[in-house]
Image 1 (cartoon, rainbow, N blue to C red):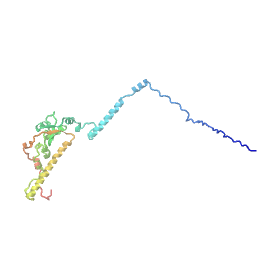
Image 2 (image 1 turned 60 degrees about the vertical axis):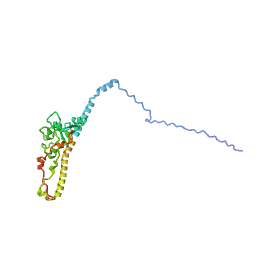
Image 3 (image 1 turned 30 degrees about the vertical axis):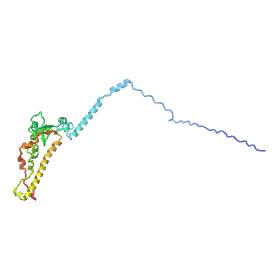
Image 4 (image 1 turned 90 degrees about the vertical axis):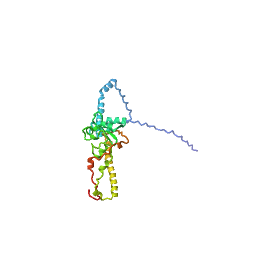
Length: 268
Protein backbone atom coordinates (compact mmCIF):
# COMPACT_ATOMS: atom_id res chain seq x y z
CA UNK A 1 0.00 0.00 0.00
CA UNK A 2 1.38 3.16 -1.05
CA UNK A 3 2.37 5.56 1.65
CA UNK A 4 0.67 8.71 1.47
CA UNK A 5 2.85 11.51 2.88
CA UNK A 6 1.31 14.70 3.85
CA UNK A 7 3.49 17.76 3.15
CA UNK A 8 3.59 20.01 6.04
CA UNK A 9 2.90 23.63 5.27
CA UNK A 10 5.06 26.40 6.61
CA UNK A 11 4.02 27.59 9.97
CA UNK A 12 3.74 31.35 10.41
CA UNK A 13 6.75 32.89 12.22
CA UNK A 14 5.79 34.44 15.41
CA UNK A 15 7.86 37.42 16.47
CA UNK A 16 7.88 38.41 20.05
CA UNK A 17 8.14 42.12 20.65
CA UNK A 18 9.48 42.97 24.00
CA UNK A 19 9.06 46.50 25.08
CA UNK A 20 11.74 47.69 27.38
CA UNK A 21 10.45 49.92 30.02
CA UNK A 22 13.06 52.20 31.40
CA UNK A 23 12.77 53.08 34.96
CA UNK A 24 15.76 55.51 34.91
CA UNK A 25 15.03 58.77 36.69
CA UNK A 26 17.19 60.76 34.21
CA UNK A 27 14.78 60.10 31.41
CA UNK A 28 11.79 61.23 33.32
CA UNK A 29 10.29 64.40 31.85
CA UNK A 30 11.70 67.50 33.55
CA UNK A 31 9.42 70.23 34.75
CA UNK A 32 9.51 73.42 32.66
CA UNK A 33 11.21 76.41 34.33
CA UNK A 34 8.96 79.10 35.49
CA UNK A 35 9.02 82.18 33.25
CA UNK A 36 11.08 85.14 34.57
CA UNK A 37 9.07 87.88 36.00
CA UNK A 38 9.65 91.26 34.40
CA UNK A 39 10.53 94.01 36.88
CA UNK A 40 7.76 96.41 37.43
CA UNK A 41 7.97 100.05 36.48
CA UNK A 42 8.35 101.00 40.11
CA UNK A 43 11.30 98.61 40.54
CA UNK A 44 13.00 100.00 37.45
CA UNK A 45 12.61 103.54 38.72
CA UNK A 46 14.12 102.54 42.05
CA UNK A 47 17.16 101.03 40.28
CA UNK A 48 17.65 104.18 38.23
CA UNK A 49 17.49 106.32 41.34
CA UNK A 50 20.08 104.12 43.08
CA UNK A 51 22.61 104.59 40.18
CA UNK A 52 24.84 107.69 40.46
CA UNK A 53 26.74 109.00 37.36
CA UNK A 54 29.23 110.81 39.60
CA UNK A 55 31.15 107.58 40.14
CA UNK A 56 31.88 107.32 36.42
CA UNK A 57 32.70 111.02 36.24
CA UNK A 58 35.20 110.60 39.08
CA UNK A 59 36.82 107.66 37.30
CA UNK A 60 37.23 109.64 34.07
CA UNK A 61 38.70 112.64 35.91
CA UNK A 62 41.14 110.42 37.81
CA UNK A 63 42.30 108.81 34.57
CA UNK A 64 42.82 112.19 32.89
CA UNK A 65 44.84 113.52 35.84
CA UNK A 66 47.13 110.48 35.89
CA UNK A 67 47.55 110.57 32.10
CA UNK A 68 48.33 114.31 32.20
CA UNK A 69 51.01 113.83 34.86
CA UNK A 70 52.62 110.99 32.95
CA UNK A 71 52.61 112.95 29.68
CA UNK A 72 54.07 116.02 31.39
CA UNK A 73 56.87 113.91 32.83
CA UNK A 74 57.71 112.48 29.40
CA UNK A 75 57.53 115.79 27.52
CA UNK A 76 59.61 117.67 30.10
CA UNK A 77 62.25 114.95 30.28
CA UNK A 78 61.49 114.24 33.92
CA UNK A 79 61.45 117.91 34.97
CA UNK A 80 57.85 118.15 36.19
CA UNK A 81 54.54 116.31 36.53
CA UNK A 82 52.44 119.47 36.31
CA UNK A 83 53.52 121.07 32.98
CA UNK A 84 55.38 123.77 34.91
CA UNK A 85 58.44 123.75 32.64
CA UNK A 86 61.06 126.46 32.75
CA UNK A 87 61.60 126.20 28.99
CA UNK A 88 58.65 124.48 27.29
CA UNK A 89 59.18 123.00 23.82
CA UNK A 90 58.51 125.18 20.79
CA UNK A 91 55.24 123.45 19.94
CA UNK A 92 53.87 124.39 23.37
CA UNK A 93 54.52 128.09 22.88
CA UNK A 94 51.81 130.32 21.44
CA UNK A 95 54.30 132.53 19.61
CA UNK A 96 55.70 129.48 17.81
CA UNK A 97 52.27 128.53 16.45
CA UNK A 98 51.64 132.12 15.41
CA UNK A 99 54.90 132.10 13.49
CA UNK A 100 53.94 128.88 11.69
CA UNK A 101 50.74 130.42 10.35
CA UNK A 102 52.22 133.87 9.78
CA UNK A 103 55.30 132.75 7.88
CA UNK A 104 58.83 134.15 8.19
CA UNK A 105 59.39 137.84 8.84
CA UNK A 106 62.04 139.95 7.13
CA UNK A 107 63.77 142.73 9.08
CA UNK A 108 66.49 145.14 8.13
CA UNK A 109 69.38 145.52 10.60
CA UNK A 110 67.82 148.79 11.79
CA UNK A 111 64.45 147.11 12.35
CA UNK A 112 66.09 144.17 14.09
CA UNK A 113 67.79 146.56 16.52
CA UNK A 114 64.36 147.48 17.93
CA UNK A 115 64.01 143.96 19.35
CA UNK A 116 66.94 144.10 21.76
CA UNK A 117 64.81 143.80 24.88
CA UNK A 118 64.75 147.45 25.92
CA UNK A 119 61.07 147.60 24.95
CA UNK A 120 59.35 145.02 27.15
CA UNK A 121 56.26 145.00 24.93
CA UNK A 122 58.30 143.49 22.08
CA UNK A 123 59.95 140.08 21.87
CA UNK A 124 63.73 139.72 21.94
CA UNK A 125 65.25 138.73 18.62
CA UNK A 126 68.79 137.84 17.69
CA UNK A 127 70.23 136.80 14.37
CA UNK A 128 73.08 134.54 13.43
CA UNK A 129 74.32 134.17 9.87
CA UNK A 130 71.19 135.93 8.57
CA UNK A 131 68.57 133.88 10.44
CA UNK A 132 66.45 135.48 13.19
CA UNK A 133 65.48 133.63 16.37
CA UNK A 134 63.10 134.56 19.17
CA UNK A 135 64.92 134.31 22.52
CA UNK A 136 62.22 135.97 24.62
CA UNK A 137 61.90 132.86 26.79
CA UNK A 138 65.35 133.67 28.20
CA UNK A 139 64.95 137.41 28.73
CA UNK A 140 67.15 137.36 31.81
CA UNK A 141 70.14 136.25 29.72
CA UNK A 142 69.53 138.11 26.44
CA UNK A 143 67.71 141.16 27.78
CA UNK A 144 69.27 144.35 29.17
CA UNK A 145 71.86 143.55 31.80
CA UNK A 146 72.10 139.90 30.74
CA UNK A 147 75.38 138.20 30.01
CA UNK A 148 74.43 137.69 26.34
CA UNK A 149 72.71 141.05 25.83
CA UNK A 150 75.17 141.93 23.04
CA UNK A 151 73.63 139.30 20.77
CA UNK A 152 70.10 140.73 21.04
CA UNK A 153 68.84 143.01 18.30
CA UNK A 154 71.70 142.27 15.90
CA UNK A 155 73.33 139.68 13.68
CA UNK A 156 76.54 139.24 15.66
CA UNK A 157 77.85 136.21 13.78
CA UNK A 158 81.46 137.41 14.06
CA UNK A 159 81.34 137.60 17.85
CA UNK A 160 80.28 133.95 18.11
CA UNK A 161 83.66 133.05 16.59
CA UNK A 162 85.98 135.58 18.23
CA UNK A 163 84.28 135.78 21.62
CA UNK A 164 84.48 139.58 21.50
CA UNK A 165 80.80 140.20 22.20
CA UNK A 166 80.87 143.98 22.47
CA UNK A 167 83.35 144.69 19.67
CA UNK A 168 82.18 142.23 17.02
CA UNK A 169 78.42 142.78 16.83
CA UNK A 170 78.44 142.32 13.07
CA UNK A 171 77.82 139.59 10.49
CA UNK A 172 81.02 140.63 8.66
CA UNK A 173 83.32 137.60 8.75
CA UNK A 174 86.13 138.99 6.60
CA UNK A 175 89.51 138.23 8.15
CA UNK A 176 88.05 136.40 11.15
CA UNK A 177 90.09 133.32 10.25
CA UNK A 178 93.25 135.27 11.13
CA UNK A 179 92.71 134.36 14.77
CA UNK A 180 93.62 130.77 13.88
CA UNK A 181 96.74 131.67 11.89
CA UNK A 182 100.18 131.32 13.52
CA UNK A 183 102.33 134.43 13.98
CA UNK A 184 105.19 135.06 11.61
CA UNK A 185 108.69 134.90 13.06
CA UNK A 186 111.70 135.49 10.75
CA UNK A 187 113.89 133.19 12.81
CA UNK A 188 111.38 130.35 12.58
CA UNK A 189 110.36 131.06 9.00
CA UNK A 190 113.98 130.73 7.87
CA UNK A 191 113.64 126.95 8.21
CA UNK A 192 111.61 126.92 4.95
CA UNK A 193 112.44 128.13 1.51
CA UNK A 194 110.32 130.94 0.08
CA UNK A 195 108.33 128.49 -2.02
CA UNK A 196 107.81 126.11 0.90
CA UNK A 197 106.78 128.95 3.21
CA UNK A 198 104.25 130.27 0.69
CA UNK A 199 102.69 126.81 0.31
CA UNK A 200 102.66 126.40 4.09
CA UNK A 201 100.85 129.70 4.57
CA UNK A 202 98.23 128.74 1.99
CA UNK A 203 97.60 125.50 3.87
CA UNK A 204 97.46 127.31 7.21
CA UNK A 205 94.87 129.78 5.90
CA UNK A 206 92.76 126.98 4.46
CA UNK A 207 92.76 125.20 7.84
CA UNK A 208 92.05 128.50 9.64
CA UNK A 209 88.97 129.13 7.48
CA UNK A 210 87.70 125.63 8.21
CA UNK A 211 88.10 126.24 11.95
CA UNK A 212 86.24 129.55 11.71
CA UNK A 213 83.47 127.86 9.75
CA UNK A 214 83.16 125.07 12.32
CA UNK A 215 83.08 127.58 15.17
CA UNK A 216 80.18 129.46 13.60
CA UNK A 217 78.42 126.26 12.53
CA UNK A 218 78.39 125.08 16.15
CA UNK A 219 76.24 128.05 17.19
CA UNK A 220 74.08 127.94 14.06
CA UNK A 221 73.19 124.34 14.89
CA UNK A 222 72.63 125.26 18.53
CA UNK A 223 69.86 127.70 17.67
CA UNK A 224 68.43 125.52 14.90
CA UNK A 225 68.01 122.57 17.25
CA UNK A 226 67.12 124.45 20.42
CA UNK A 227 63.65 123.56 21.79
CA UNK A 228 63.47 127.01 23.43
CA UNK A 229 64.24 129.41 20.60
CA UNK A 230 61.98 129.55 17.55
CA UNK A 231 63.15 130.65 14.13
CA UNK A 232 60.99 133.61 13.07
CA UNK A 233 62.57 134.98 9.91
CA UNK A 234 65.59 136.42 8.14
CA UNK A 235 67.66 139.60 8.03
CA UNK A 236 67.00 141.69 4.94
CA UNK A 237 70.17 143.26 3.52
CA UNK A 238 71.30 144.84 0.28
CA UNK A 239 73.32 142.64 -2.04
CA UNK A 240 76.33 144.96 -1.79
CA UNK A 241 76.04 145.52 1.96
CA UNK A 242 79.49 144.06 2.59
CA UNK A 243 81.15 146.53 0.23
CA UNK A 244 79.71 149.38 2.26
CA UNK A 245 81.12 148.10 5.55
CA UNK A 246 84.69 148.97 6.63
CA UNK A 247 86.85 145.90 7.05
CA UNK A 248 87.17 145.08 10.74
CA UNK A 249 90.45 144.36 12.44
CA UNK A 250 90.83 141.31 14.60
CA UNK A 251 89.69 142.14 18.14
CA UNK A 252 92.36 142.37 20.84
CA UNK A 253 91.33 139.18 22.68
CA UNK A 254 91.43 137.09 19.52
CA UNK A 255 94.70 138.67 18.34
CA UNK A 256 96.43 137.97 21.63
CA UNK A 257 95.38 134.31 21.47
CA UNK A 258 97.41 133.70 18.31
CA UNK A 259 100.47 131.48 18.73
CA UNK A 260 103.80 131.58 16.87
CA UNK A 261 104.54 129.20 14.06
CA UNK A 262 106.44 126.12 15.18
CA UNK A 263 109.57 124.65 13.67
CA UNK A 264 108.95 121.23 12.12
CA UNK A 265 109.78 118.48 14.60
CA UNK A 266 109.90 120.83 17.59
CA UNK A 267 108.07 119.87 20.75
CA UNK A 268 104.84 121.65 21.58
